[in-house]
Length: 385
Image (cartoon, rainbow, N blue to C red; front, side):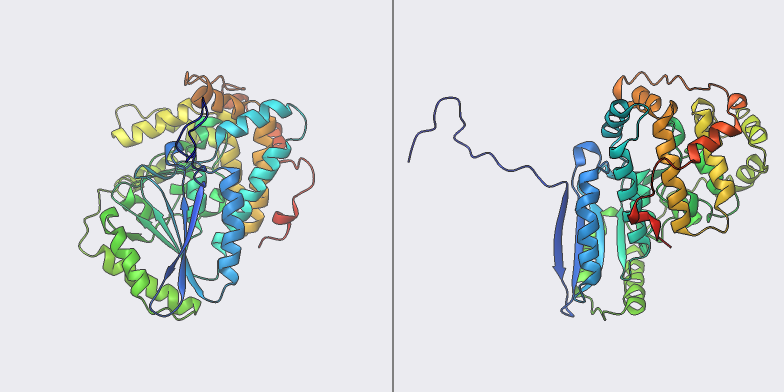
């Protein structure tokens, strides 16, 4: 046995942990369940390009493997399923690109949106275990799953107005499908949802206490899977219903305030909605916080989110993801998105200087410029339905 040389450690350096861990769970029927675990808990499992580039080919391989009955998508740690995208890396790419085309942003958004679409269209059960913080890009991963589980710690939001972006990752599609005008309210205010709210608005399917996750995994392994999409989805629905039996949901905010939400959003003129949101002092704390978030947020983001809401009706998921792709690159090319990231994550002063600073100064031309194509549409998005 040789002695370590000077300046080296006697302990072998371990390779870095992968940002997504994959394994396959054997089941009684001989099928397997694929398990993909986001594995960056110190970063609240923020969705990075590296994660997307691991998830996409593995999900496609599991989709095409007849012995894979379904997929479980979960995350390491107890704090977050996925707290959004890797904004620091996007900020660096935006600063480096300046007014030129941003190849890194083009790759990130097109790959992320293609992955979201893949989950929405997956021909086998996909169980998303959405425990803890679920924001932005994390909602994009969750939203398309066939079986979306929330727990007592789930805190779900689309907080993009606070960073100069808009509710993307298919937000134009799934927010438009929420009851009434709740989706528009969430887009403009970033109001947080708990598990009961998520079930009420249709972004979740089952409530299971996080302590029962191990029992769910055991039930997945013990089940007789048929290799048939409809039968296996029904079996998973029954399994989750059993797992959640007797569990008490938290108090929901959205149904309590549904009439107020619809009244706040009851206009096709954003300025009128903004006026009501800006006059929320003395209201319920949840509603008041929502109004304050809107008031502090990017006026351009509000106008862009409202424009996408208006354009979403009647469009397919694929059409809206293509529109969101152009809008995301538009945000990268304008001032508010990098400024919002700077204020939140870089300098952390939480005092973004929006340009323009007032909603009244956001012109239709500015909104339209955000939506204009910037270069050729990537092939991976061109034919999404």
